[in-house]
Image 1 (cartoon, one colour):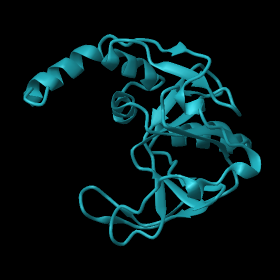
Image 2 (cartoon, helix red, strand yellow):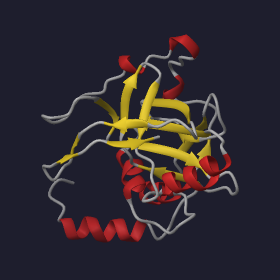
Image 3 (cartoon, helix red, strand yellow):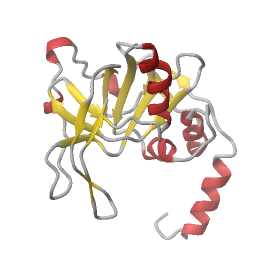
Image 4 (cartoon, one colour):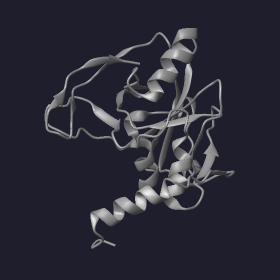
Length: 203
């Protein structure tokens, strides 16, 4: 409720993440209502905006789930990384050694010259996004903690082009691969603290 004190909210959060709940897999969901493949795909049609003065690109991912799967285990990582629309078929995503998704890409895929399947999820429920930005132990799947926050399993559905599982009730899911030898420039990005992050090279 709006009048609930922040300390009570924090205590409830800490209590719930101590009891993770594994997800359940369903056959379909709202994210499957419209499916576009091949030449139908046009990222420029999606609702992505420029957020601050000084930006020169549209960011599909600022409050998102970037989902990648470790190829050597059952660990699926949820993170929240920038995803910039460069053209109708290309996103630039900030994957580097400082985040789990970047380490999976660099150590398991780029090191072996293989493309990495990826899903960019926009409009999942707020507790899923909250789990994606939390700091859990390595090899812990954030979806289990999202289930703990909900106190019930998160419904997941299989992607159309890979084995990655995504929240079935998300609004938008973009599926693709991160190429091991393809790098684009990250555009300026207005950070929440009020400064402009400079351009950089990203997969």
